[in-house]
Amino acid sequence: MEKLLTGKLCVVTGAARGMGRSLAIKYAEHGANVALIDLNKEGLEMAAKEVEAKGVQALPLVMDVAAAQEIDSAIRAIESKFIKIDVLANCAGISTSRLLVDVEEAEWDKVLNINLKAVYLLSRRAARNMIQNKVQNGKIVSISSQASKIGEFGNGVYCISKAGLNMLTQILGLELAEYGIAVTAVCPGYVNTEMVQQVFRKRGPLEGMTPEEYEKTLTNTVPMKRMAEPEEIADLMVYLSSGKANYITGVSVTIAGGRTLI
Image (cartoon, rainbow, N blue to C red; front, top):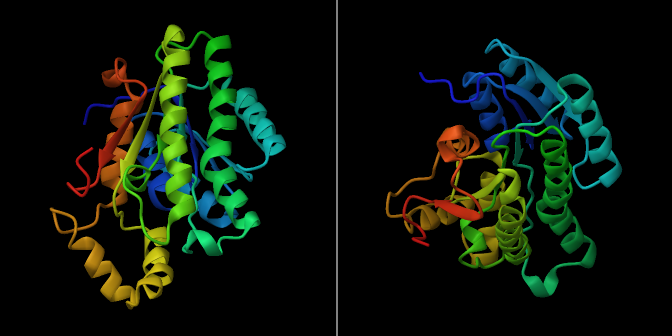
C-alpha cells in the first residue's frame, strides 16, 4: 500500500469512536503520527493504542471541543510534542432528534457549538500553526453530512449546523488558499456507526416507525441499498488530506451511495 502521509502530524477530533476513530487508524496506516481528541477517555485510549500499533506516535487528549480554553490547551500540548500540524480532521459531532418547534435553546446551542463553532475555533488555531510553521500543503478536512444539502424531518438543528459547516469550508478555502492550505468537507449519507443507530432509535418513533422499520425505510432510499462503513468515509478523507488533493479546496464532497447527487 502506498503511504500517503508518512511523517505528517494529523489531528483528529471525535477520535474515540465511529468515523473519527476509523480515520485516526487510517492516518496511522498511511504513516502519520496522530493527535486524538475526544471527551470519551476510555474510547480515546483504546483508539490511541490501535494507532500506536501501526508503528507511529499517538497523543490522546481528553477535551471538550466546544470549550475554547480547552482547545487552546490541546493545541499547545500538540505543539509542544510535534511543533507543527499538517492535517486537522474535524470529526466530532452530535445530533438531536426533535422537531424544530420543540427544540430548547440549550439544545440548539449544544449542537451548533460542537458541530460548527468548534470547527471554526479548531480550524483557526490549526491554520495559524500551519502559517507560522510554513507548512507545505496543509489540510483541514471536516465531516459534514448529506443533511447539509437535503433537509431531514426531525433533524433540523443538525442539518442547519452542517450547512453552516459547508459555508465555513468554502470561506476558509478562499481565505487560506494563499498559504497553500486546502480546506474541504465530506458529506456522508447513512454510515454504520453508533451515532446513526441512535438516530434510528430516536427519530423512528417521530415518524411512527420502529427503529428497524426506520432503518429499512432510509436505506431503501439509497440507490446502492446499504449504509456506508466508517472505513469508506475514512478512505476519502485520507485522500483529501494527502498530497494527491493539493488542488482541491473550498468544496463539500458528497459520499452517500447516490442518495443525493449534489
